[in-house]
Structures are given as structure tokens and as C-alpha cells.
Length: 261
Image 1 (tube, one colour):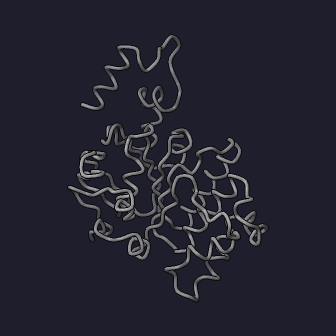
Image 2 (tube, one colour):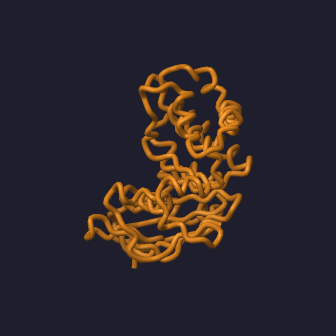
Image 3 (cartoon, helix red, strand yellow):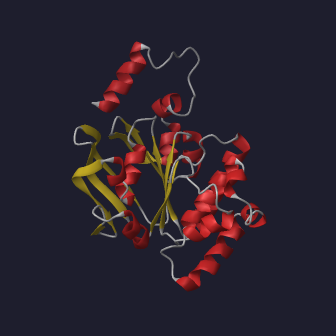
């Protein structure tokens, strides 16, 4: 179980970004973390994976534990070794390297004898990458680059995979492919924490969902319940009753204000 309790994060000693966030990711599950830009979703992932220092961030309160053991003081390399992998927003592949070179870089914490078996697994999940394994990664399509980024993270054989906006900037057909791949990865035994603005996609595969607003978790329910919640339908799934207005209408503003109180 990956657990965050009462987490506060400050950037540059003055900007309070996370304000007492608590959530849990049970082993074997897919958990969705939803919210608008600036809600704090990426900061949650940085706190888990030891990347806050790079962005001048610091945990000032709370804990992050994996199977009951604290990991919030680990650096990024030790976090990977502990069994947590991350695919960052924007893919961040090495564009001048080949596909296979990118994948091998992801295996830097793996035992030497497991690199080839890791490649076999990634190529089985992503046949397109096998076809392009000698191609320079910068010439891949956006969807193929996302596959490469996910495959690179899988090379370390993580127990928990953190995905930051994997559908961002992709065509609907490719988003569907990425969705199905996340399900396949989970079925193979990898737990997934999925950060997404595409709530439809995320809640269609998640078992549980959390919604963040301005650094706080404002909703915490099973994914099936969130899909039927009227506020979630309107604010995150793009479904409004006939005649409903915009977010700036007074009654909707009051409902959102109630979430944040």
C-alpha cells in the first residue's frame, strides 16, 4: 500500500502548494487523481518520487509510506529502487537516442540479467516500439513517444507506476490505446496512480478516485460513484443538464466554494 497522510509541500520556502493531502493507493489497483491545472497533482507525484528538490520544493508536514515504511526522505534513485516508477508529463524521452537506448536507460537500477527480459516485456506490450527500436526517438509520433516513456519506466520493474497526464495532446484514438495499455499493465500486476485531466478516461478504468482543488483533496470516492456524481459530471466530465450555466454562475460558484471550505 502506498499511503500519503496530511502532506504539505512548500515551493521556494513561501508558496504553499499542498495543504494536508491524504490518499492511498492499494496494491493491485488503479487510482485516479483528478483536478484542473494548478490543483497540485504533479506536486503529489514529485513528493512521492523524490523530485521536489529539483523544483525547489520541500515537504514541510506529513508522511509518505510504502508498505508502512517511510519513503518521503528518499531521493529519486532510491525511490525507483524501492519499486516506484514515474512517467512525467510531456513524456521527457531522450530525443537524440534510439527507442531501445531510451528503454535501456530506464533499466539503470535493474539487475544486469533482467534487462533483456525487461525489453521482451516492453516489446510485447508495445509491438510498435519493437518495430522502431533502432529509430531515433525524436522522430516518433506523440503516441509512440508516450509508449516509449511508459516502456522506459517499466524497465525498472516498478510495483507502482505513476502516470502524469499520459493522454495530454494525443488524438482520441491514441488516448483509447493508452487507456487499454494502462489496463493491461495493471492486469500484469503493476499498481497505477493515474494523474489526469481527462476524467472520462481515468474514471473508466480506475477503482477509486480523488479530486483535487487548490492543493486539497475535495472528493474521495470509488470511481463508479464519482462517475454518477452530479458535480463531477458537470465540472469534470463535461455533462450539464439542459439550461445549466457556466462555472461562473452564482449557484455553481457556491457549490465549488463548498468543496474548498
